[in-house]
Image (cartoon, rainbow, N blue to C red; front, side):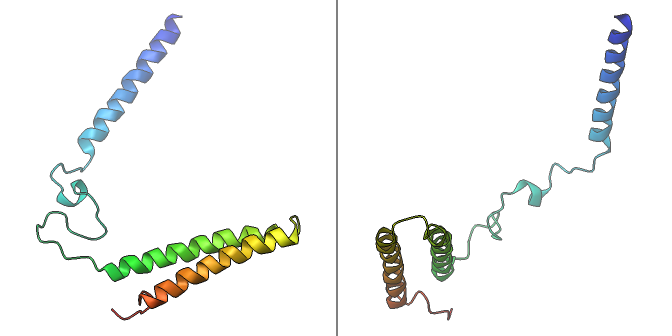
Length: 117
C-alpha cells in the first residue's frame, strides 16, 4: 500500500513538473494581436471602416448551396426508383424537379446567374 502511495506521489510530481516546464518554455505571446482577434473571413476586425461585402458573392453562394442540396435530394430518388410505385415516384420527382426549374428561372430573371462583377 505504501509503495502504491509513493508511486502515485512520484507520478503526480513528475506530471506537475512537466506542466510547469512547458508553461515556462513555451513561446506563447499574450499580446499577439492576430491570434487574439476573431477570424472574420479575411476582414481585419481591428479597423473601423469595413469594406462592404458584395451581395453578388452571397447570391452565388446561395445558388451553389441550392444546387448542392438538389443533388443530395435527387440521388436517393434514383435509388428508390425500383422499390416504390412508379406513378407515386414520378409525381414526387417531377414536382421536385419542376420546383427547381422554377427557382432556376427566377434566378435567371433576377440576373443572379450573370457572372460579371
